[in-house]
Image (tube, rainbow, N blue to C red; front, side, top):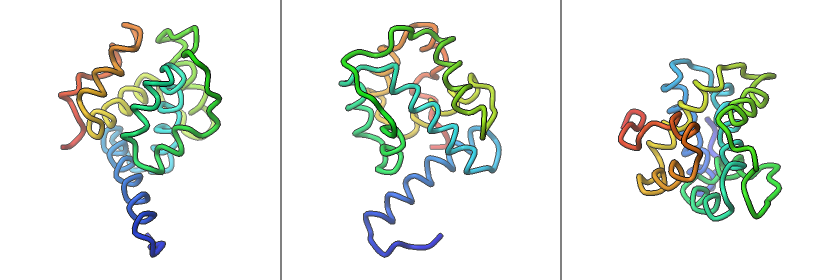
Length: 149
């Protein structure tokens, strides 16, 4: 990996790589490009299931480059989507990963949620889980189950 020579940028790239590597580990594969596409698909879908305040609190804990991906193509609205069902969530993840990274959307969601558990504070994870519909919340492991930490 080449260095940009600017500490802030180098650190941002490093942190993004850590998250992608952690997702590779959870998914038990070694395909960073595919892991990045899965991470993007689940985070952007999750974003659209949250309120603006929840989005702000979560984004504050994301590394700079992951935060950019999280907000990419976002169209803010005062409330989350109306259909916040588990099925709608998984269909959105499936659609977002269909072209470049076909993966079972349930596996994808659970894996990304585990990575979030490993990098986001327990209190924030609990708040996020509590804000989701019960059937979707069931996909998110308890915060005590972080990836490799």
